[in-house]
Length: 98
Length: 424
Image (tube, rainbow over the protein chains, first blue to last red):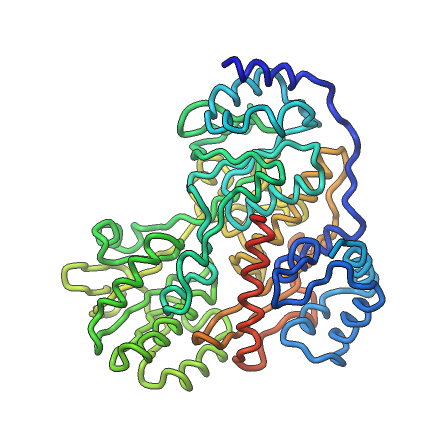
């Protein structure tokens, strides 16, 4: 119980009350992580998205959506997103460390 | 709205959960603005816990998990088929700890929503500001007479939770004579992983084709027809396993006679050498104990913008336990995506903001029809204000054009990345 009491003393320390904001596009882009890795850092196989220049990712996603770029699944997923949403997603990944 | 983690509840935590003592004071208590407790460290719970810590390190997150490690259901059919091993499906909880998540090895036995407390099997309570319940499924064993006794005796298995039963079922298949019959019984939808049974049938047939070519796979489906990727599965069966795999729709199991290895259907009895019965399912036990089950005594209704229960405020429900939205499967992908909607909503609410009113999530389910060919189904779901639920985005989603080897590479990469997304 000594440990518990010591911890309880710490628990009485001042409360941090900063209003935490998610990174821009973070919630939207988090959907991509199940195939492309957390923050776009893929374990391999599926393309890593972290650090990809924004324009390059927007171009790829737009080409998937239009059908110009052949795909197994990305053409079906890209059709679920609007231009502003793809823009936010690309912006998010371009800002991630590789 | 916010509730501070007070001295009393902290003492309760420290005194009750001895597993926490190993972690000492580090990482929790001192600076936390709020505490989130998560029940269940599967695809839903582990991912939510990690993302809350990523998005707001000021929130204390405690995960309660009764299993000592994670075993993935996705890819477990490949163990039955013989192309993957159990060790490839396992993950531990150290990655969560590196994100500052406290992992308590215990079982939640009840929830007092008025007091905002989770009761633990080993005694003691865990106070929470918000609770996330991600309990997976439990089975309606009594719907299939004689099944539970046969399962307890080790003769008839479901193997619909990856683990010891996966290993035992593989042993049954290995021990079966060439020329024997493997019978797979599928319950009425909704159940965990809609394409899973058809993938399993394909994997067992793939194994038989190599090792016991005179054997048969008999699929007895309570549903009228294949519930997911039907044309792709049927084409694979016809082309890869002709004369070996037989599919019957509208064949609902009502009982098992383990002594004679007989499955009892509504209309007839069917004998087999290996019986594999997937029973009907419902939200995991703790969901009912917490008062979260809202539909047919089976599933938990949620607000899809926050994953908050429609029955109990302050409690969020994830994954297979939820009453799925239209065209939404009970899948690891969906649990992963729901976890992020939930994490973002919890972070927002605990910081005095409103959750994203217009979430958008993606499903991608891969199925192996042999050891090297895969098919997928994908969908994008968004908030539909008129219907007050998630519906699929018109024009999005679809299935593979045909089974192919390239998607086997993508499927395995999906597995690595979704496991990492939860546990690394």
